[in-house]
Every structure is written in structure tokens, then in C-alpha cells.
Length: 112
Image (tube, rainbow, N blue to C red; front, side, top):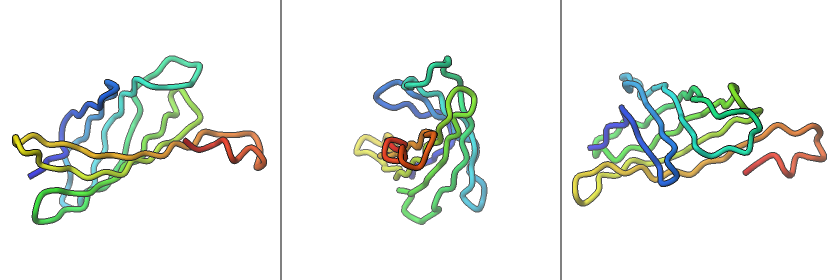
């Protein structure tokens, strides 16, 4: 059974901390990225999310990170927590980042 609470690290060394998931599946925490194209120094950023609470424990969830401390961008992550064959918990995640652009014609380069 996957428990989202605690620290998670990805293959690039970025780390996420999720607080206790409440009875509705809501949680908050911080994201410590190691990857950025911003000119300012990277700082931990707040995240808020929601987890689907199901019976088998391999839960889906999503969260938003506001990089407001060092960047004009916001990212959303969607994921599922899997129980691995050795009992470890694994998050499979995809993300979308929207970076501020100065005009509607520049919209094409806002997403990654």
C-alpha cells in the first residue's frame, strides 16, 4: 500500500516532501528542484495536491508547484503510486510546466 507522506526523490535528484494526506486526500508540502532555467538561485517551492484514496493502495494523485520564489512559472504533476515487487513504493509521474511569456503570439513557447 502506497503512502505518499514523506520524502521522495527522482532520478535527477529533485526532492518532494508531502505532508500527511487528510481524510479527503488533500496534502501540501515542498518541492526542491535541481533543474531550472531561471536566472535566480533555486529555492524550495510550495506544493498543494490531492490524492485519490482507493482500496488497493496504488493511488493516483496530482499536485501543483508554484515556483514563485525564483521563477515566473507553475508546474502540475500527475502520478500514480505503485508498490514494487520488492515492497518499495514507486511514483510514476508526468509533468507540465507553464512559464510566463510576454504576449499571446509567444504562447507557443510557454509550455514544456
